[in-house]
Length: 187
Image 1: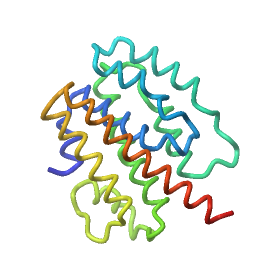
Image 2: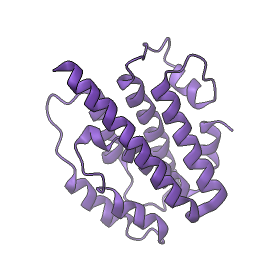
Image 3: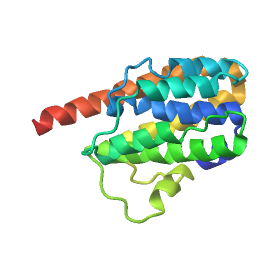
Image 4: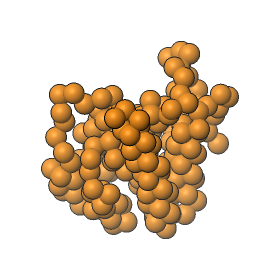
């Protein structure tokens, strides 16, 4: 099943976890602590009543935007800023999760050393719809993580959250290594 189909079928908790996982993997771009999103992950195991309170606290912890912020960091910040404060508003959470999916894939494309410019405006959506010919390794891995997380949550519900957190942590380490390698190369 394609990522687009998985997002369309996900419930509110799965959507919130999907968006949160995308943001979690992109945290190195914001200079945030690896545990910055832990309270939001914890709220997903509960009834969701604390989501808005925890979201406000997390946003306060994130470093402020700088005027020279590059596109990958701006995309990560958009994910954090765009999170709906009411996790029970499925329409808003679905739109946010979809935006986070696209933004995370764009971030990974921009950071992939082997990345080539997209040939058209539709190709990012083509990737999410399952057309993966010529995909760069970093984008392919991000697409696989997003798909795996939604499949886990669809198949295991709240019990799949622990694995989703682990998958996101792995992705965050990969992205941190890419950012570090690029910073060394630019110096």
